[in-house]
Image (cartoon, rainbow, N blue to C red; front, side):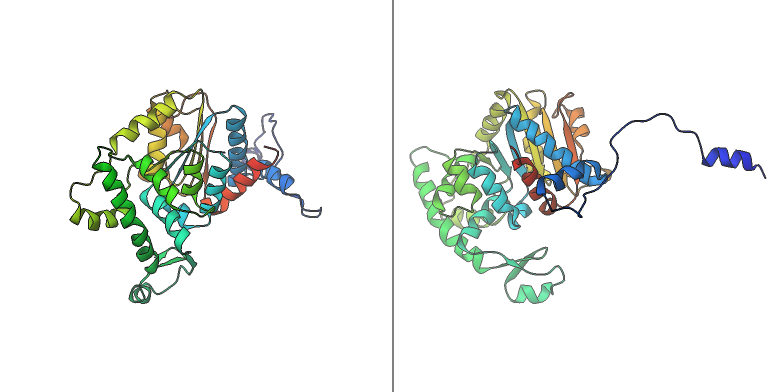
Length: 325
């Protein structure tokens, strides 16, 4: 038995290495939120990634970058809706990109709230009761009935304007819809009042599409202009000195933000927050380095992917960014 060789293999000599020491928050002292979030820098794993996200977004603000915030509909299903509305209220973001659910659920919540349920609910029973489940969030069907009562007169107004030659784009649609609501917790409410464009290229993929189906049975010539918004969002990116992308989730909202930045040679900054994995080639799982290969993220700018549930991570990121902003 060669113990000398075994010892050499196990206790292999290290090269000289310098770096931050791994250390967590000291709860023996009076709690301080700023120090708590600063401690994430040296905690390791996704805590360090979260702290890096805070630092990058602070740099976006310091450099006066045009900030694109992309988010999937489930972010609005959750309590992140109020946080995104706050960002729009304070003009801390410049462009919003979401899905149809991200538009309609924001409006539905101005009419009636969503309810906390359970991941383990009996879905057959919920169906018999007319209750829809989004994870552990319940949305009774009467919310959609109230939404239809709001949307049908809205469609009629748009249709009347169309007769004079005005075909509305998705961002004009979301702006006009934002003017219809009077709830200061609403994303669209503040986006409309602060002239923050809300792009939704998949506007028909949700309850809005359901309402359009019924409306177009009696108004078959009603039109929505999706094409003009690709010009608008791309020119916002191209005319910006610097751009930053904050993406919650993946899919269409993420791609729409990053593809607009392709035209300018890529976003300068990117912060991704998602549970997506790379192995299946999904948009949600794609890292910022993959965006570099497409030219959607430039070579020199800072970026990070924080892996985890945005409902936990994003409030902490916002809290960190707002500290000494």
